Image (cartoon, rainbow, N blue to C red; front, top):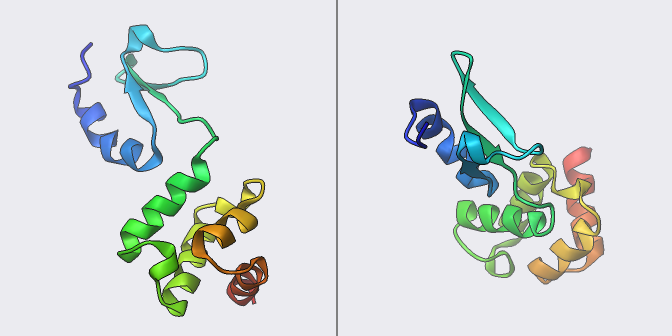
Length: 119
């Protein structure tokens, strides 16, 4: 079945936000997630590799907050850390260090923002 099914159209914005992509049912691999409608696999979701996941999360937050992280106000940087925390960014290895570099702040600053969120 073509990638024009209503289910495909419904999930497309979510997949775009995740960096995932759709593949046809016949091109699906074992690691892909099947999209099943009325017992029929209409397509499959191929998740993006973890490599670059933090970059994708940061790009999404920058878009949401209206600018690159280094140019944001202190309050918006704190909001960015909160959004990234809510989206699971800090489960990734070296996320604090990489985010500090991206924000052009110290690791201590990122940890302080996280501590304020979790108080």
